[in-house]
Image 1 (cartoon, rainbow, N blue to C red):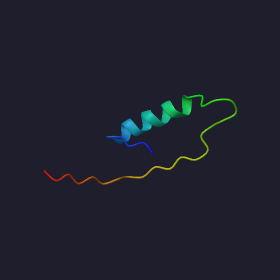
Image 2: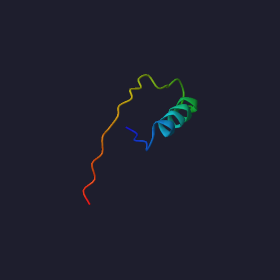
Image 3: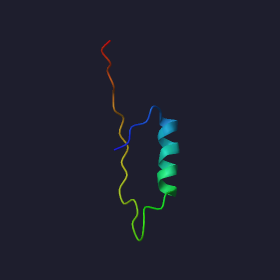
Image 4: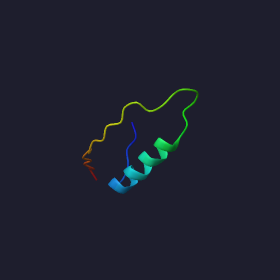
Length: 42
């Protein structure tokens, strides 16, 4: 799981992960995107 600060950062991260070579014969097979609300208590 990877969390990003913004939608733009998520898109850039997805592009970078798609460009990576995970190894011999391996590849990303499933990608799902979710919005995760964050509530901080100060």
